[in-house]
Image (cartoon, rainbow, N blue to C red; front, side, top):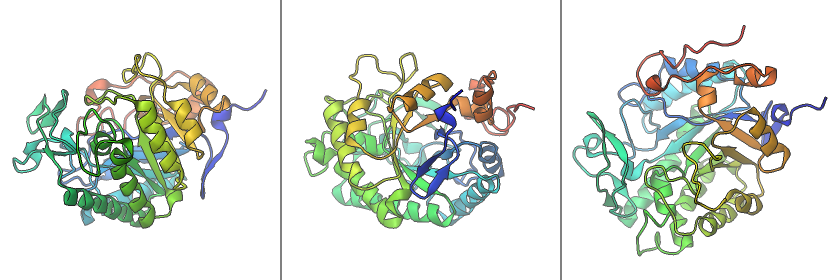
Length: 360
């Protein structure tokens, strides 16, 4: 019987993966109050070291780019030291780990910034929920970034990449998806600028490309990945022509020699699926010639088929990894999966975090 391609090895540049299953970045909000990763987080990621690759939850690149209580950052020495313990814990079990980096843009709240509004490409409020110090609330109208501020955020990303490298990560992923700042620049539903960062797709893609080039300058391109979500409507995102927008983006990213492109285009039935949008992944598969990772509602069979049919090289899993630290073994054996406890996704402490059972 031929081996399931999902369990075959794969190389991302110098990084050898024993299988093609990736832990998707998931915000679990267990960091200390100052955004410092802790021993609980180190244990959580070490439990999942059997993955071909772990992409750790998004870390903010600056205080102004921070989002919610419990979310980690990568802009202070204490945060860097905390992440160093996480990376070391994963490596002690033979694993590989990238760190996702983000700026949340308009999805932050004035409570976290001394009453100042969140930042965005344009002063367009998202018809979505965010959080303040008291919990869930409506998103607020952001302030449009000045051009010089954009340059400063590019520098923040580069500095965070340098910190991730020093902390011992195997690479970084730029979060350009799911309605956060870079995605807000990419899609014309959130970007109505009239300067060099708005209007035609080449201008809207400028910020992402500047961030990615800065990341590649701080580290080699083979240690940098990018995540996109062309048709995801999460955080009130939309674009008038996602095929044209993201084909251009993928073509430009292809020139950089990145480790991979991470595409979140959910399968039908997934809560992030967009049933009325055109399918963008085939266009990106042609435009980006490097390794393509897909995400969004995959199981053992659909992941195997996506790789076997050359639709992707890797598949990332979110909720499945969350509740099953031994997901590779469960898929190999066809064993039943633990169900995630949705009530503890973002609550402090080990319950619903480090206490999921593994197979004997």
